[in-house]
Length: 535
Image (cartoon, rainbow, N blue to C red; front, side):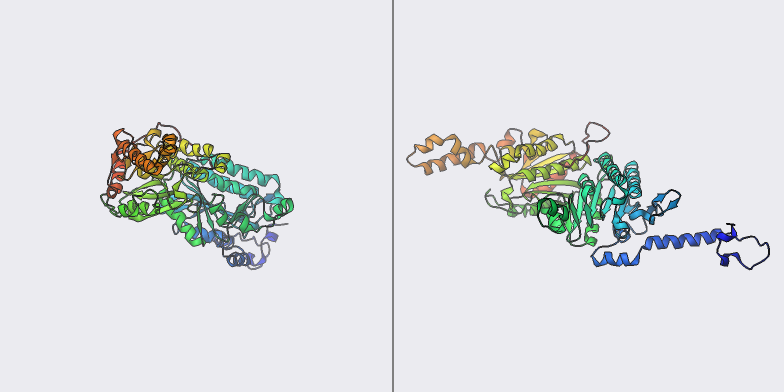
């Protein structure tokens, strides 16, 4: 075939004997490039309509919401599967990768495109993700994954599985070095689910997101159980039962908006300080409402989130795992313009006791904050660990030790505030001075003891009470004596286990001043503090 036979007749101009073919100009090639790029970016219109009918946005629509306008630079737009010398796969291979900015700060992203081969992961798809993950780690910038995939591309066999393995290895290498955020906006099934589980935060959307290792069909075949995708691995399940979902939303727009907000609270990497600035909320602002929010009676519940809202800047905080292990509140907020991580016992749920799930939740949060240099503020009102055979048999000691280990291992500034009761081992675990809290403050309502006065008297004076003529009267007298001698507000302060007993209204000022005093605290220098494994 001659060169002229490869060029459309219309491109040759007027016929002439022995006329030389007219090659396309640079301008022609540029025009064709724009047309090809436009078709590739636009994608298949019927597939886009199907995506919208499911209540889902396309990969590029999601990126438009996530990133600052006009900031996205795409990588490998034309990359596709190649067999021999011929390309036989669609452009992008089902994943959009690149970099952009959020609030002016650099991030790296990949967004799986369900319109192209169901967003399934094959060799090229995996290679594109590997590339953007490597670039994020090299640049020291956050990585955001928008997951919407049918899973491994079966027709590519083991190469698809190898693609997942490469993602997992890079997740672990980046753990504790750069923030990794997974946003599950559709199916994420089989081995693919391990990548979100290895990242720092998981966002999900109700009714459209789901994650599971084995689907409903496999479960029905193996066990005979019938379950829907939503019942098996929907957002509600992972928010309330498994504890996988850090945040859940009703729609993709609000979900992606909060991804942007979370990024504003996090550093770009573990060598940079968290973002800070003038919050516009006076450091000296007193909080007189705190005395009304927290009842003096240790048996009366209250919502500790009201306490957090009073002391943080503008009352704004972002609660992590809000619907899981609700007896412990973990939240990111700002105090004096600086990002802080807040842990607080929640008296509204199980009286604020620590149990297996609360311990896991707290340990994970403490490790994340420490890995990224975020100071910790711990608000204590804890009656102890949850008693029970079930807790003991399922390893409350082992799981409680995770929270203890995480606190003991943390090198960031740590401030403890004891609001009310702090009993037994749970007091120690909730970042007491004895395990390394830098500064500890207590309200005048604090009761720090091995156990409550009534329980203590029952143990110490069991025989005396059994033989007394008036056991109730004697019990009341002994309880009052025990509380006066060992549980008065200044007992721990007199022994150096609390640095100061403060007016509740001064809590915000005292905590911020303490964090400022500790701002130059430096851990032993090392390449990274530690990873952030899924405890």
